[in-house]
View: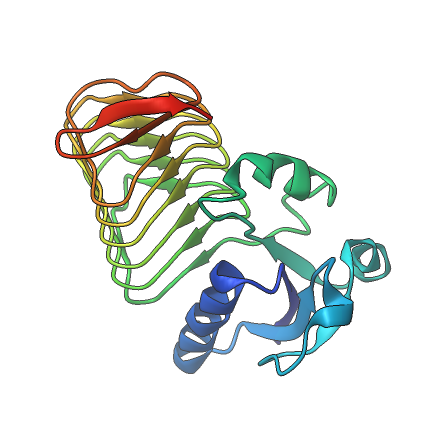
Length: 215
Protein backbone atom coordinates (compact mmCIF):
# COMPACT_ATOMS: atom_id res chain seq x y z
CA UNK A 1 0.00 0.00 0.00
CA UNK A 2 1.44 3.39 -0.99
CA UNK A 3 1.92 6.26 1.46
CA UNK A 4 0.42 9.68 0.83
CA UNK A 5 3.06 12.39 0.36
CA UNK A 6 2.98 16.19 0.18
CA UNK A 7 5.78 18.35 -1.25
CA UNK A 8 6.81 21.88 -0.18
CA UNK A 9 7.12 24.35 -1.86
CA UNK A 10 6.21 24.40 -5.54
CA UNK A 11 9.78 25.04 -6.66
CA UNK A 12 12.55 23.35 -8.57
CA UNK A 13 13.69 21.09 -5.76
CA UNK A 14 10.20 19.76 -5.02
CA UNK A 15 9.39 19.27 -8.70
CA UNK A 16 12.62 17.29 -9.15
CA UNK A 17 11.70 15.33 -6.05
CA UNK A 18 8.46 14.39 -7.81
CA UNK A 19 10.51 13.01 -10.71
CA UNK A 20 12.58 10.91 -8.27
CA UNK A 21 9.41 9.64 -6.60
CA UNK A 22 7.97 8.62 -9.94
CA UNK A 23 11.19 6.72 -10.66
CA UNK A 24 10.96 4.97 -7.28
CA UNK A 25 7.33 4.07 -7.92
CA UNK A 26 8.26 2.58 -11.30
CA UNK A 27 10.45 0.07 -9.43
CA UNK A 28 8.03 -0.55 -6.57
CA UNK A 29 5.00 1.66 -5.79
CA UNK A 30 5.66 3.47 -2.49
CA UNK A 31 4.23 6.98 -2.56
CA UNK A 32 1.12 8.74 -3.78
CA UNK A 33 1.81 12.45 -4.27
CA UNK A 34 -1.18 14.46 -3.08
CA UNK A 35 0.24 17.79 -4.25
CA UNK A 36 2.21 20.84 -3.16
CA UNK A 37 1.99 23.35 -0.35
CA UNK A 38 3.09 26.88 -1.20
CA UNK A 39 2.51 30.24 0.47
CA UNK A 40 2.09 31.75 -3.03
CA UNK A 41 -0.67 29.29 -3.87
CA UNK A 42 -3.04 31.98 -5.15
CA UNK A 43 -0.63 32.86 -7.96
CA UNK A 44 0.32 29.35 -9.08
CA UNK A 45 -1.20 27.49 -11.99
CA UNK A 46 -0.42 24.79 -14.52
CA UNK A 47 1.33 22.54 -12.00
CA UNK A 48 2.08 18.84 -12.42
CA UNK A 49 0.26 18.02 -9.15
CA UNK A 50 -2.43 20.02 -7.33
CA UNK A 51 -1.61 23.03 -5.14
CA UNK A 52 -3.23 22.11 -1.83
CA UNK A 53 -2.85 25.51 -0.21
CA UNK A 54 -0.44 27.44 2.00
CA UNK A 55 1.74 25.94 4.71
CA UNK A 56 -0.99 25.96 7.38
CA UNK A 57 -2.88 23.32 5.35
CA UNK A 58 -0.31 20.82 6.63
CA UNK A 59 -2.17 20.69 9.96
CA UNK A 60 -5.14 19.00 8.30
CA UNK A 61 -2.90 16.34 6.72
CA UNK A 62 -0.55 15.59 9.66
CA UNK A 63 -0.99 11.98 10.72
CA UNK A 64 -2.51 11.01 7.36
CA UNK A 65 0.36 11.95 5.03
CA UNK A 66 4.10 12.51 5.05
CA UNK A 67 5.86 15.71 4.02
CA UNK A 68 9.04 16.41 2.06
CA UNK A 69 10.03 20.07 2.61
CA UNK A 70 12.87 21.14 0.30
CA UNK A 71 12.92 24.94 -0.07
CA UNK A 72 16.10 26.78 -0.95
CA UNK A 73 17.93 28.53 -3.75
CA UNK A 74 21.05 30.74 -3.82
CA UNK A 75 18.73 33.69 -3.15
CA UNK A 76 16.78 32.21 -0.26
CA UNK A 77 18.79 29.37 1.29
CA UNK A 78 19.47 31.21 4.54
CA UNK A 79 15.74 31.08 5.33
CA UNK A 80 15.47 27.28 4.87
CA UNK A 81 15.56 26.45 8.56
CA UNK A 82 12.90 29.01 9.40
CA UNK A 83 10.63 27.71 6.63
CA UNK A 84 11.02 24.04 7.52
CA UNK A 85 10.69 24.47 11.28
CA UNK A 86 7.13 25.72 10.83
CA UNK A 87 6.09 22.15 10.00
CA UNK A 88 7.47 20.70 13.27
CA UNK A 89 8.55 17.59 11.39
CA UNK A 90 9.21 14.36 13.23
CA UNK A 91 10.47 11.05 11.79
CA UNK A 92 6.96 9.64 11.69
CA UNK A 93 5.64 12.40 9.40
CA UNK A 94 8.74 13.20 7.35
CA UNK A 95 10.33 11.27 4.51
CA UNK A 96 13.68 11.19 2.73
CA UNK A 97 13.83 10.52 -1.00
CA UNK A 98 16.81 9.01 -2.81
CA UNK A 99 16.51 8.70 -6.58
CA UNK A 100 16.96 5.05 -7.60
CA UNK A 101 19.84 5.99 -9.91
CA UNK A 102 21.88 7.37 -6.98
CA UNK A 103 24.51 5.14 -5.37
CA UNK A 104 24.69 5.29 -1.59
CA UNK A 105 27.39 3.33 0.26
CA UNK A 106 26.14 0.95 2.90
CA UNK A 107 28.30 2.74 5.48
CA UNK A 108 26.83 6.17 4.63
CA UNK A 109 23.91 7.67 6.53
CA UNK A 110 21.12 9.99 5.36
CA UNK A 111 18.96 12.03 7.75
CA UNK A 112 15.24 12.76 7.64
CA UNK A 113 13.55 15.12 5.19
CA UNK A 114 16.53 14.87 2.86
CA UNK A 115 16.49 14.66 -0.94
CA UNK A 116 19.25 13.06 -3.02
CA UNK A 117 18.65 13.41 -6.73
CA UNK A 118 19.52 11.39 -9.82
CA UNK A 119 23.06 10.25 -10.55
CA UNK A 120 24.60 11.13 -7.19
CA UNK A 121 27.37 9.07 -5.62
CA UNK A 122 27.66 9.03 -1.82
CA UNK A 123 30.76 7.18 -0.71
CA UNK A 124 31.94 5.29 2.37
CA UNK A 125 31.43 6.84 5.77
CA UNK A 126 29.57 9.92 4.51
CA UNK A 127 27.06 11.46 6.92
CA UNK A 128 24.26 13.58 5.51
CA UNK A 129 22.13 15.37 8.09
CA UNK A 130 18.46 16.26 8.29
CA UNK A 131 16.75 18.62 5.82
CA UNK A 132 19.52 18.49 3.21
CA UNK A 133 19.24 18.64 -0.59
CA UNK A 134 21.81 17.13 -2.98
CA UNK A 135 21.15 17.98 -6.63
CA UNK A 136 21.86 15.63 -9.58
CA UNK A 137 25.21 14.09 -10.50
CA UNK A 138 27.07 15.20 -7.38
CA UNK A 139 29.92 13.16 -5.89
CA UNK A 140 30.38 13.11 -2.12
CA UNK A 141 33.61 11.32 -1.31
CA UNK A 142 34.50 9.25 1.74
CA UNK A 143 33.91 10.56 5.26
CA UNK A 144 32.44 13.88 4.17
CA UNK A 145 29.87 15.44 6.50
CA UNK A 146 26.85 17.53 5.54
CA UNK A 147 25.28 19.20 8.53
CA UNK A 148 21.55 19.88 8.74
CA UNK A 149 19.91 22.16 6.14
CA UNK A 150 22.85 22.07 3.70
CA UNK A 151 22.12 22.40 -0.03
CA UNK A 152 24.56 21.05 -2.63
CA UNK A 153 24.12 21.96 -6.30
CA UNK A 154 24.39 19.68 -9.32
CA UNK A 155 27.72 18.29 -10.58
CA UNK A 156 29.52 19.24 -7.37
CA UNK A 157 32.57 17.30 -6.15
CA UNK A 158 33.13 17.13 -2.39
CA UNK A 159 36.46 15.41 -1.72
CA UNK A 160 37.16 13.14 1.24
CA UNK A 161 36.58 14.57 4.69
CA UNK A 162 34.93 17.80 3.54
CA UNK A 163 32.59 19.29 6.14
CA UNK A 164 29.64 21.47 5.14
CA UNK A 165 28.27 23.54 8.00
CA UNK A 166 24.63 23.92 8.82
CA UNK A 167 22.51 25.83 6.32
CA UNK A 168 25.26 26.43 3.76
CA UNK A 169 24.85 26.38 -0.03
CA UNK A 170 27.32 24.97 -2.55
CA UNK A 171 26.66 26.14 -6.11
CA UNK A 172 26.55 23.85 -9.13
CA UNK A 173 29.87 22.64 -10.52
CA UNK A 174 31.89 23.62 -7.44
CA UNK A 175 34.92 21.57 -6.39
CA UNK A 176 35.97 21.41 -2.75
CA UNK A 177 39.39 20.15 -1.69
CA UNK A 178 39.76 17.24 0.73
CA UNK A 179 39.44 18.09 4.42
CA UNK A 180 38.06 21.59 3.78
CA UNK A 181 35.43 23.03 6.11
CA UNK A 182 32.64 25.25 4.82
CA UNK A 183 31.19 27.36 7.63
CA UNK A 184 27.54 27.53 8.61
CA UNK A 185 25.48 29.78 6.35
CA UNK A 186 28.25 30.17 3.77
CA UNK A 187 27.63 30.41 0.02
CA UNK A 188 30.02 28.79 -2.46
CA UNK A 189 29.52 30.19 -5.96
CA UNK A 190 28.89 28.24 -9.15
CA UNK A 191 32.04 26.55 -10.47
CA UNK A 192 34.20 27.66 -7.54
CA UNK A 193 37.30 25.67 -6.63
CA UNK A 194 37.64 25.80 -2.85
CA UNK A 195 41.12 24.97 -1.50
CA UNK A 196 40.91 26.48 2.00
CA UNK A 197 38.34 26.71 4.79
CA UNK A 198 35.43 29.12 4.35
CA UNK A 199 34.26 31.25 7.27
CA UNK A 200 30.67 31.03 8.54
CA UNK A 201 28.37 33.26 6.52
CA UNK A 202 31.01 34.05 3.90
CA UNK A 203 30.36 34.28 0.16
CA UNK A 204 33.17 32.80 -1.95
CA UNK A 205 33.62 32.37 -5.71
CA UNK A 206 36.30 31.92 -8.35
CA UNK A 207 39.22 29.65 -9.17
CA UNK A 208 40.68 29.39 -6.64
CA UNK A 209 37.77 30.63 -4.54
CA UNK A 210 38.16 33.96 -2.77
CA UNK A 211 35.91 35.60 -0.25
CA UNK A 212 33.67 38.27 -1.76
CA UNK A 213 31.87 39.27 1.41
CA UNK A 214 29.71 38.13 4.29
CA UNK A 215 26.08 37.40 3.56
